[in-house]
Image 1 (spheres, rainbow, N blue to C red):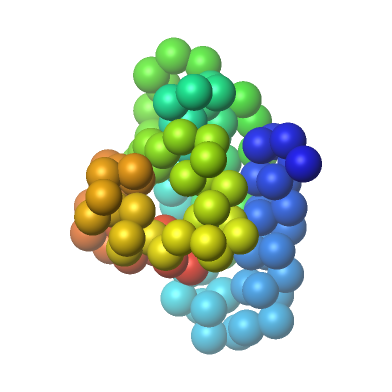
Image 2: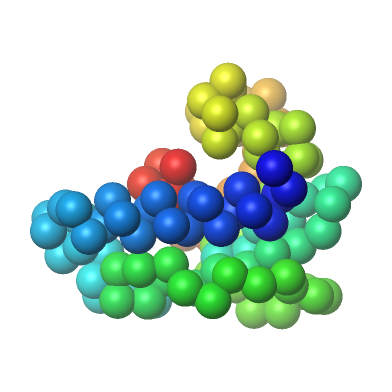
Length: 112
């Protein structure tokens, strides 16, 4: 599966999870964020969090605006998705960096 297909699958899974959880929908409902995924050996992607849903997954160019930037390599990205490596271990070993507010960093756990 390509990175873009994996991201699309994550977006779909996240949105289904929100649809199934009124509490999560309420928690995320007021947040509006642009999330950039920067893969050091592949490229950049972006997705918007609006009204509790991820929308508008796209290839990102340059250093456009993002409220949260997640930086990793493709191997670590796939490892995170497959749960072969946890987010905390990836952060501690510097295979993953998340730039954003503390609230936004905690949001990352919900995205996986």
